[in-house]
Length: 252
Ligand SMILES: [Zn+2]
Ligand SMILES: [Zn+2]
Image (cartoon, rainbow, N blue to C red; front, side):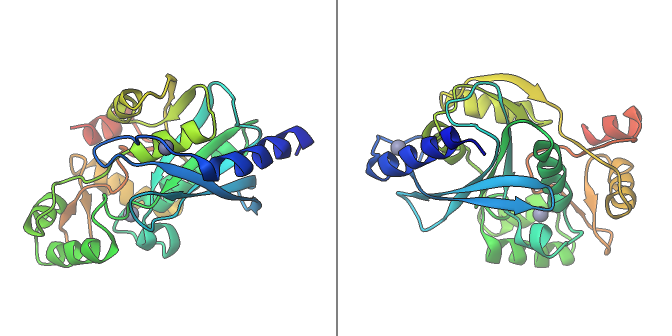
């Protein structure tokens, strides 16, 4: 932790609460950096930076490693909140594996960050996600369940993420993703994405059976009732040690 870095954070904390702009995306979202603290974790030593926004009470955070303010080519992972997966360890999705893989990788880098976006359940919210799970228990897939609830298949938007990067004065990024569409969205919001880092999860006892099942089922998750559903993160999962055929099957 250099003094310089804390000075940069202090300066941002001083200036950013006054920030105003026309906003980004379909909702003209604008965020302000309002709090920052050290965050030692089992994945490494990070800082956590909290943002408020002008649209709802959602409190988005950046989990940063090293000196990212004003930096170029910063490795960045976008993670959409999933209470059931991230916190509880649900096997209906692979969100926790994806989050842990990102924190583990970035925790070993000189700098990088995970933007933890509070868009639960592909953006439909926790209660609606659980309603959708319930519909899936009755045999619908994710897409059908979301449509039955009156949502589009995917309500996620990365305008908040783009603004958070701007608030941190990040010059350019390398996006950790297996999904080129995410790069297109960020670029459209004015973020310079110089490179893509494939997001590869280490194989472990928790994800191996689950992902092998998925790979053999043409990219769809299978829950314990045998119902198919889609991943909640907008990335195709790639697990170290899996064959190209298995991964290829997930891209279909
Ligand atoms: Zn703004
Ligand atoms: Zn999830």
